[in-house]
Length: 50
Picture (cartoon, rainbow, N blue to C red):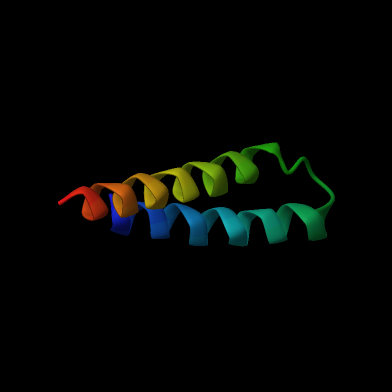
């Protein structure tokens, strides 16, 4: 989950930058950034419990 979270955050951030520069809607990239942050949060809490 941790690796997937980082991948989603990086790809989402790059897509967000492209959407901002291109003038298109940032909703899609924000979803992927949010999903990546959520996965990182759950991975951190999972490792704390163990």
